[in-house]
Length: 213
Image (cartoon, rainbow, N blue to C red):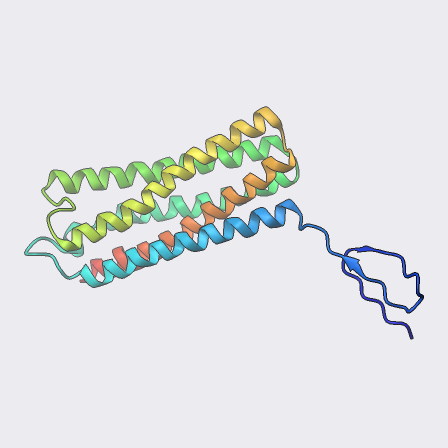
């Protein structure tokens, strides 16, 4: 039986030896974009890993100042967590709506995601402002430096995510569900879900373990 090798576009077999060689074409843009964005996300996760490691080392270095159990408000942290986890669900719904070209559910899902993200940021900003007003700013101790760095970096990412979300809504309004817009929406959804996963780590390591210190 003749053996055939197939990897893309076939060429003729003038010698009739039963071997057809095909050349692979370029990967689809959606695959290339997703691959590149995963590389970015992995680099971001490496950065957060460094912040987590620094916090783990410095969490006990309070320099006579307060520790986590004295400054963390579990009620506010719980509200933040619920808002961010719910926003992951609504972002997923918006992604599905975009794939189905449904503008109403897309805008609704993105709008709810935006509101939940803003609530999260408002609570976090109030927490930081309250700590600074009480004299517990990042310069008070190594513990607080690590805390503000880790949680603040995540907050900056959420802020960037909200701006990106509004940009995606504007692009769909102006351009519709074009292929390039859908690729950007896919990257945004990956970014937002990654932030939720990182927050689960922040919630567990910083707030839950810190409150029991």
